[in-house]
Amino acid sequence: MLVFVMIDGARPDALEPAGCTNLLALAARGASSMAARSTMPSVTLPCHMTIFHSAPPERHGITTNLYLPPARPLIGLVETLRAAGMRSGFVSSWEPLRDLSRPEQLAYSWLREPPLDPAAYEQALASEAVRAARAEQLDFLFVYYGSVDTVGHAYGWMAPEYLYQLALVDGYLGQLLAALPADAHVLVQSDHGGHERTHGTASPEDMTIPWVVAGPGIRAGHRISAPVSLLDTAPTIVRLLGVAAPSAWEGRCPEEIFA
Image (tube, rainbow, N blue to C red):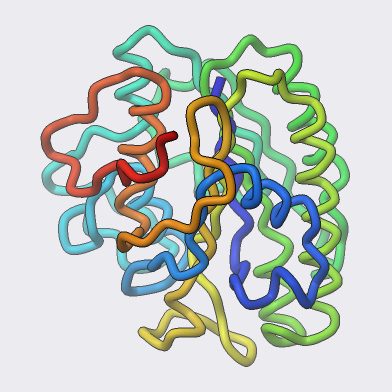
């Protein structure tokens, strides 16, 4: 089983000030980059399309948070796993993520729209992620936490409220990690960072993200020296699940992560 956790809007330089003990401990027992790169525009849906299709926006065509079907469809991560006979599931708090895969490809999907309060905790999502990991018999589970980004827009990146929300989500991550079997792989990252109350630019604050992978066969405490970007997530996931990556994907699994 592989669990892919997205913490939307998390900056790597915020992890220690926020006290993200679970994510930092995961990095200590796995391989990580605290200088991984987002894509331009550094906006949520374009970034996720890049992650799930290992293709930049100039190929998949999504440049805003509005989905438009690409003129030349690309095979995505979920479709690749489905073709290999694997069961995939999503637990998320943002409905546009439904377009990351085509219809009838997911074995399981759960969506709960967050309250309007930007500081609202994602307790229901966290509980469902734990339940799904234990009970749904999935090969791949994607868990999306969106509240850190929401609080960043409301109060500013690196503001006390932002760091507090990041710490809360790190606590939810800890609950999920504790529920996983010992042979599970985990990949945790962000899609983009942020500055002031926004993101979407090519600034280092917007483009630099954390990227952490751990599990059987992964080097412990290894800081990845090679460049890592959003393009590399899907190739890494299929490699860990023993599935061949489509030839059209542009990223690659960083070989140095393996023990």
